Length: 381
Ligand SMILES: Cc1ncc(COP(=O)(O)O)c(C=O)c1O
Image (cartoon, rainbow, N blue to C red; front, top):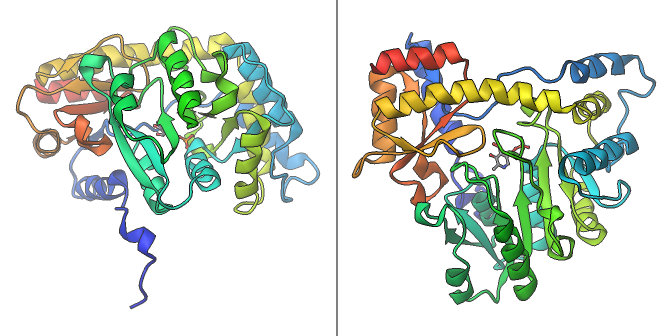
């Protein structure tokens, strides 16, 4: 038997990778599964994006290796998008690095800045990849609490009491997944000041800023952010293009260039046609965002009804692609999810997937047609 590397012994297979196999098995046995578990947008991308991908096959050089930094037009489109949507000025030449999805950026950033045994502040609850990537690099995750009573924002007083001497990176993710909390202006000012005070790289993972928010925010809108922050963004949720794998890293040249050094040793550029499609998506007008959000608003009303029938409590003002719901006191997340799957063939995500502070909560995805959510409501009724 060939031994796997020690680093692999510290991480488990991704929850969804395991659980979706079980869900697929139940489906193959004839169970009429309604999947409200995963946040993979089911709506179509902008038509211009798919047309541009199709048309790209007529261009010379379409099948060739592409630049490590993406097409200049793609970086220009990303810069214009940041200007028009967030009012952030960026140099397309030096402050933007196109990525194959923001998830890979979590690994690339970590490889660029972490040595073994460095420490990383990670939200609990939060996106599980921050922890697994940190462990894969043999650095140490330091989980920081997000609690409902503190509006799912970090408690900076508690953070200041920690020994931060070995902390190199702090992951933040607002609008927050899984809780749907959108951070206020004060939070961004505080976190930037915190990063500067302790020489910590603050990375805002920002894929949900257009989904059911009042106004999209970027950490780079805030004074001093470029000194100590990077931001990951993505077209996966914003333009319903999760499978295309297009994201972006934004920040000052020195930081972005360090990540490029890693990335250029790992892949050989993004497929030309995908870049052409992404350019068109990024040019979408405000009508696009409103049309997507009107669908999610309707679905959300139904999911809130479903959650209520299941005796869960939700905050209707939460943002993002999910509804985060508090279970009745004493009910365990995973038991609740398994029972719902067994009794009603409805799959939702237990809050514990996102950390210990997710115990007592579940997450419903809005990535399912209204008719399916209505069917789920009828089953529970
Ligand atoms: C918080 C968060 N960050 C990053 C990602 C990765 O998105 P992508 O790699 O598709 O850009 C996801 C996807 O679900 C997410 O929820």
